[in-house]
Every structure is written in C-alpha cells, then in structure tokens.
Length: 393
Image (cartoon, rainbow, N blue to C red; front, side, top):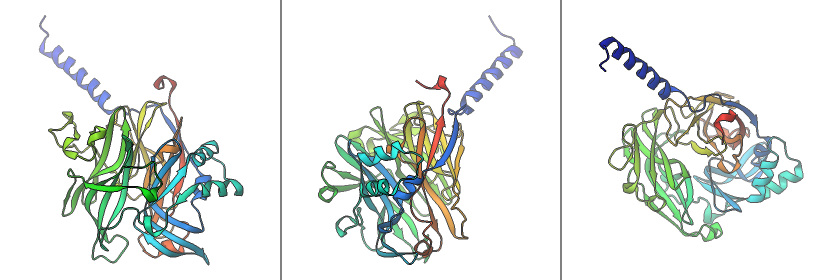
C-alpha cells in the first residue's frame, strides 16, 4: 500500500525524533551521585619523610596481593620548618600497595584512621625512592624524560604507557612539551620491582607535530578479551578523546589495533574519530559491573575545579553520555597560582556503588609546592553511585 506524501513525511519526522532521542539520551539517566572526602587516604599520603608529593597516580593490580602505583613528578625528602626539604626529585616513581592495605581502606571508606591504623597502612605501601628505581622510567637525557600514563596486566606481563616529555626554553612550571609516546613491558611482574626486566617500544600510532599531537594510553581498560586504549588528540588548547582496542598479544603493535570510527565502528582501515572534547591528558575509564556501565572520570578542560563523570553502556563515549560534575576541588584558586588537575578513578578502590577518585593541585609558581604543604599531594574523594534497580543485574 502506498503512503501519501504527507503521511510519509510525518512518519519520517517521527522516526527522526525517535532516533535523535535515542542518540542524545545519556546512559546514566536516573543515576544519582554523592561525593565524600576520603580522609583516610588523604592522611595516608600526608607523609613527613620519604615520599613528600607527586602526581600521576596510575594503578594496576599486579596479582591478588599487590597493586602498582605509578606517580609522575615526585618529591622525596623531609618536612622541616613547615616546608618540603627535597633531597631527591624525579619525573616518575612507583610504589607497591599490598592487598591488606586495600582491604583496610575498603573497610573504612569514610573514617579518619586511628594513628595505629594509619601507621600500618602507610608502611604497607612501599615507595621505591632509591637510586635504582627513582625514576622508574629512565630519562633519555637531561631534557627528555617520561611521564606515566595508563597500564594493564595481560598474558602474565605488565604493560605501562608513557609520554615522552621535552623541556622547552620557557622558564616556568609549563616549560615542557609532548615529544613521543611509548609502551613499556615488564616480563616478570611477579618478582620484586628491583628485579623487573623492563623494555620499551614506540607507539607508532602516536603523532607529534608542531602545536598538536595524538598520544595513546591516557587510560587502559582490559574488558571481555580486548584491551581498550584511550588517547587524546590535542590541538592548541583543545583536547579530544580518541579510542582504539587491541587483542592482548597486539598491545605493542599499534598497526594491529582497531580504531573507533564513528561511522564504521572499530576498524583497522579507519582513523580514530574525535569522540569527546574537553578531556584532559590524564583520565580514567573503569567498568562498574554492578551497574553495567563504563565510567569516564576527568578534570574538565585539563585544569579546573570541576571533576566530571560520564557513564556509558559501552566502552565508547561521546557527547550523548551526559556530563555530571561529581566534585568541586576546594584547592583550586586557593592562591592566585594554584590549580587542580589530573582527576581519575583508582580502580582497585572502586566497588559496588562507589568510585574512588584521586586528583592533584599544583602551582604555576614552581617554588610554591615546597612552601605550601596543602598542595602537590594526592587528594581523594569517594563518589557514591546510586543506580536505579532496573538498570542493574
């Protein structure tokens, strides 16, 4: 039966509206979020000797007993006369946290620790600040060094992404630029870090040009047989999310990756589409198995008081996945030079109905972190997630 032109037009219009509604409706519709400061975690990293501050804080569960924490720029030394007295500084460092520490932190999610508990937990986190592993990723030379990105275990090996950073002539806190992208492999992660066999390879899919770049590994997620590798395409001040996936055996070979194209899906033949503007170089994607949702956590526009979360039914994120501000960082703007940045979820501390987020504060004045003990150390908040029952298993 033939339809009239008018009825056909109305039908097409209704289909378009339904399609638009499906496209724009956020996967997290109906969810509610509440934030609470994790005083116990904040206290754990408010140490007065040894580790005095650092950013980055990427985590990888090595096995059932140990979790690796990878820091970016790190200060080691002592707190003296209300100041950080740095005896050592490095562009990256690592710590190993034991299962007992994780269990203790998960049992007391909102409580400030007693002095005895804090001492046990602090000493359960082993910082490797000796010359052999400080920094963990050795610099190429005095002007080219590595900042860590995301990582994962796969096939009994540890893989860690990193950005190669190059100093510039600018004499300030932002005197650097991205110069490359690498993935490190540890063949024997079951051994103590001092015995790890470390190798690195170039991420060929990265592109570094004047004023713009594509860096891969900002977050890495192993899910249902695939390793999802999230990256950033930066052009000037604009940063957009890009996505690829790989089989575990191909994580070091980006020519074998599949890149997510908005029209073709995952494909080896297409370039990665720009999925979402306003992200930062560092962020996290985790999977909430209870709610069956993927969670993207980042600092809005790289340096901002706002930590935002997006939720998706798939590993792919875009503007349709509604943005929710889950926390406003009070340190942002505490002095004229202080900013907050680098928010991400701490996977091993996330669980049913909660996402634990770490973030950092720093200053455009290079020397302020030495005199201001309130900045430049990990800060933690717990985001409580209430998902409607009909969206759960």
